[in-house]
Length: 96
Image (cartoon, rainbow, N blue to C red; front, side, top):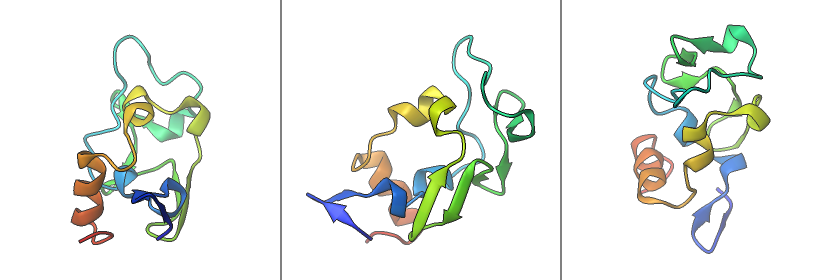
């Protein structure tokens, strides 16, 4: 996995988008405007298992978000290299 200054490269990771079906939830009065209806469910992004339905590619290799420009705030605020990032990467076996 490509890393710069020990910060994971999000485009070769995807762990944060495959950790929990409980998020990404839409926050506040934003209703997912700009995201296709088949990718939304009950006030959040639809998931296939724990993986966000908007996540394309192979975890730990090459991934991208198909709704990147319209992604929920919780996704926008998630920080590569943060404690939360390291936790989900470890949970999915992408980091020790």
